Length: 269
Picture 1 (spheres, helix red, strand yellow):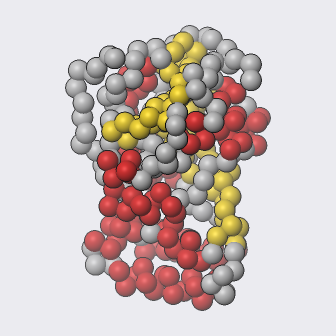
Picture 2 (spheres, rainbow, N blue to C red):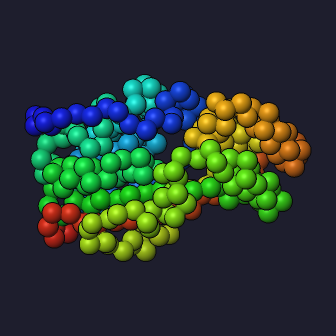
């Protein structure tokens, strides 16, 4: 197997300390979204889920590709990853992997690329992509909630937490449109656009668990702001109603696409 000349494992680590919560509390990507990405890949032999976290995207790709290599620099995240027979988890940075040259059909960075050293990551993308491979950068920003809760969540997100968000968060809020993207961009297919939204039916406790995975919440707590978090939780519970009530939440997905290393076309499904 081809070995990288240098492997860098230093990274912006905002999630390892709550890796178990991240694995259980984050929303799930739609199966239809993974279907639409797979449809655009030239072949279905190998997908690379880069910055995979606990494997939310990896397990979907596993049903659509013969093999999935899922990489992350966090050993704690990988320790809580979803096990699948055809998914191989590797503790490797996005910028330097042990993937073989021109071996990958689909490269997906879901809610992760804003943490990477982009120039070096893109160089690695070019190295491992099979001719005609698809690159997909995927992100989602704040959840959409009922109108009666929206201002409460927005005040906490953009007010209480404003100075605690890492600077990279701005790229998520702009749907990755401001990220350098040195490729000929491919317009999303109609099928992909139709599937570009996550949904969840959650109780208030599930929502608070999810909010507890936010990088800014952890920063707030480290800086002595636990009381601010508890105040928000109390207000949310009061506005929510009975604790077992379920409300529908939505997260629109943004995606940037490119076809790499040649003009190979997607294979028939």
